[in-house]
Length: 240
Length: 240
DNA sequence: CACCTTATGTCAACGCCATTGACCTTGTCC
DNA sequence: GGACAAGGTCAATGGCGTTGACATAAGGTG
Image (cartoon, rainbow over all chains, first blue to last red; front, side):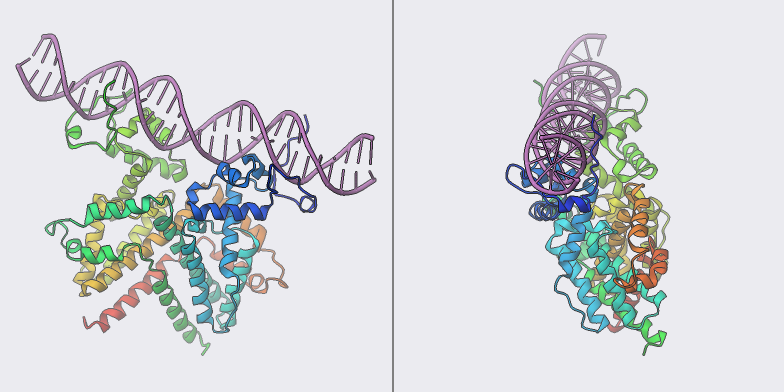
């Protein structure tokens, strides 16, 4: 009756210790996160299960619990990795509007590139290294631009919320089951394309335009509005 | 070997026919949706399972499949019901800015009131009656305001996307497991409240303000920005 | 009235899921 | 060499959505 295994996050000592192989692969936190991200990209976020991830790694599913408390913990790590990937190579220009726009679009692009992974954006606080770096940088851009602290925090919050909100939406619209994507268009065509003008005159009048607009993201224009409003407030606040 | 049951959506003829009771309750699409919404409100969207819903109705879980193809179909119906509830009692004022603001805030309030149900906002096209009414109304407000069709559709799309995006975000932030809500705050405190100023000077400088801002929604101010930008474009487009 | 059809309920089973306790293996330190 | 612990496997548990087979009762038709 040995004491039950701890099954908690891998410790410092653990990392220094060697790890025996499995029938093939050598596990590590980085490899697991990487593989999870690949699985999500190739299939969908819903398709990421402990069992499948284990299989993809050539390991027993239960082995993952040596590295992550549970699947939620694992997803947090994957989300943080995604943040990190979006920011690699970025350099501040010193012009806050340019910087914020670039950062917003980068995050958005990251989620569009891995639309299947955008569902992870719903994990708002990962509490991990890449997220901390992101927060620090955005706050630095805003405070460096001359916004007073209270204003900078409000804007930080608005900026991040905007990005996360659209990411979350994209997650729903672009990602989930991959066959539901087609189904959504089909539902649209089935339901709305032929609505009679008597009952739904406005829909009938612009049905074609509506259909063309479907699936596009409103993030970029909304981000511009956000930046414009921020600049207006900066001018009022006396920065210049 | 009778032919396999159809298990498809309840037909017209079906609705006209009577339905035998169960040990207590009499099922109906409306009752099921209603009960599902109650369950979601009382617990969480994740807690809504076919089995639990069946139990709450006093029926066998499999009975639900006489009314809905699958859980996705059921959730679509619940989402549409939520739309309907948000719109009941609303009357247009004739002033498009007022109308849009009111509609946006109503939808947002609906999701905040049933934060657990906001996850359903991720179902973007329900293809049901309430959604059709909502689209028709919003388009009517915009076209009535004098926006040309193409512009009206773009604005419709931006308006709806904005609402859905923040609803989806709220779903993640406010809703999901009810114990994760507290966990998120804890992660924040644990990770960010004590970051040293040497490595993260900006976070350290405004940690208190950040903490106070947590959990607030940026929807309302963003909606105002949206309305302002729309008005500016209307003036340019020649409406007045 | 009996009878057939059909809507709508139950029951039992399938295969998938996350998670965990018990065990085994193997490298490292004393 | 022996103890320890990290990190792997295996088997089991309980929950999930879904479905096929069956049961039952209302209505329409003769």
